[in-house]
Length: 91
Image (cartoon, rainbow, N blue to C red):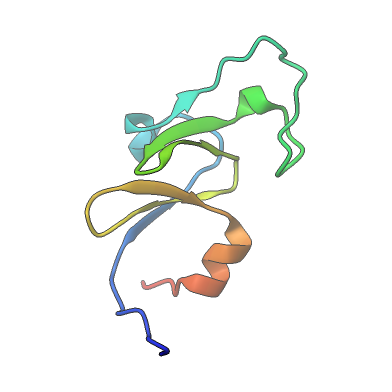
């Protein structure tokens, strides 16, 4: 059986790597012993990343990721390419 996901409006914030505005509420720096470690997903230093609590546990947020608030208030990160294919921006 094929089904179509119901259209639902969600809030999304493009995270620029700064901890200000709306993002401050749920983003925390990741403190690691190896400050030279790079992210496997984006190649930037891991200390420039954030971490948010999700329903599946904490997830790393790379600068440039979208942070989406779901229908139940849950937060989760979304890579820009997935965001563009999945969501339609409304003005």
